[in-house]
Image (cartoon, rainbow, N blue to C red):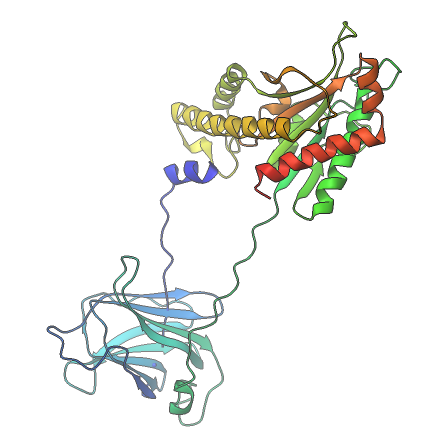
Length: 397
């Protein structure tokens, strides 16, 4: 959803490409055939990629080319006509100039470089993905070679070994971040069980067991809003989740009621009504620069900001409901649930507009059996295992 919203506001610019020079070898990329009309260079650009500088020519058709060593750099000779402006200096290239080639109908593009360079790659890429044929040459800083005017370029011996660089393995995306929120804490004990146990201690013990099981899989990163007996304001909890870059927020609680006959688990997501109210509040805040992660709403009008926040929250709410349904299906059969266990309410901890979130009422501390189970290690392991299965299902693991 963040990508879709960002795409609605931003215009992505394609990064520029790169360069090379004097006669060493002729690389004929097109077959030797009579072409009905001369190749034309429609665009020329340089790109600085840190470890290399790239020179790119957009062509109307394939064309043979020759890489040449110049006294001050590298040149490309090609049977083509230039219809484009020459690019400004960039990376290892101080200037690009053009002059007639050795043969009629040829031109020579001379790249004056900042020092000795090596040609890493020189080829014509055939048309693909709607792009025209492109001549691409990559230059890297290198030691000078004998007889090349102080510059190291391709030689006949090395030209046959010239190959495109092996593509680097794409970095793996980070593991999903799960933020677990043990309810209450510090001076806020939460509900008190029939046996005297505090909700704040029960939720913290469950959060630590769930963290242990999630981390043991090696598939997730995990953070707790609190890992000890401290008080954290309700609004700070989803804020902490957003700061951590949470992909899922799970708040753990245990309920209490005057009727001691009621027992069982329930799962809450943010209600539609509460969601609309939160969206309106967010849109009215003076500083909206971080209302949705990765998007600066301070530059948008109030109406647009409200719409974008609403869109983000609707998608987040749908994802929250999906996880809640998965959790209900993943529960251990021994875990009792309330009738109609999927519910919604305006819990403040569920109001982050861009983090899917659920609040799990694990049972009733006012019911003797629920209170006993929530205090037992075996039940904690079963409950955490159920949550783990739901998380795996949610992320497709």
